[in-house]
Image 1: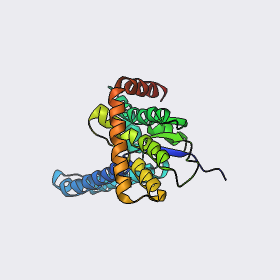
Image 2: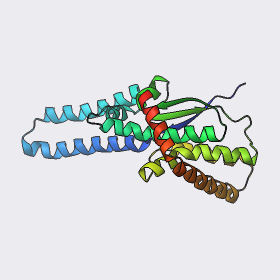
Image 3: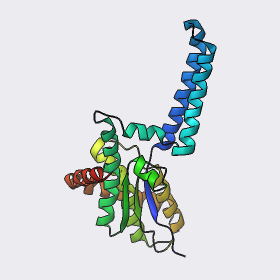
Image 4: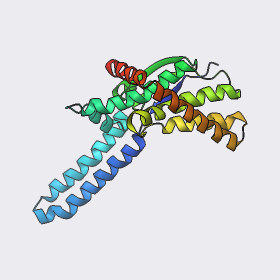
Length: 219
């Protein structure tokens, strides 16, 4: 059986979902306390609470928790585009390092809307051919390490820090966990890969920016 393709996902969905829920609960709590003092009707307070909970439920059911991201990516005055550009930079990092390391890329998606159309509940995705074998030779592990780390490092190079990449780190950990190498070797190799990727992207920053802009135009 042919293994499924690998999706390198760019997402801060978990932290944002928790934030949305917290904001909704805090808002309902404030209205419940301050409403009577301000003379608000109990029906209005109940309606606000129900509306907040309904919005969270619909978001989770229909948009996989990405409703807030869809709104953020649609903001005017360049705000939405700025958010999409950061996702594009992350995916461009994967794309460039995949080409540099001879790992075929099948598809790149930028933005929650594009990902949802393809059944993915993330903000961005780079789809790669899966490894030919689970337990890879050391040199193949090094290549995959560079590609998996490239999205986060691209954000660091361009913005000074990374937001996405939790899924990339988890996949990288699984690959090294299956490799049979000890933990110290895995950690040393990943640190080495990160240094190599950062050096390469800093040297090719204009190429990174141009690739991100192209992905943004195609989003």
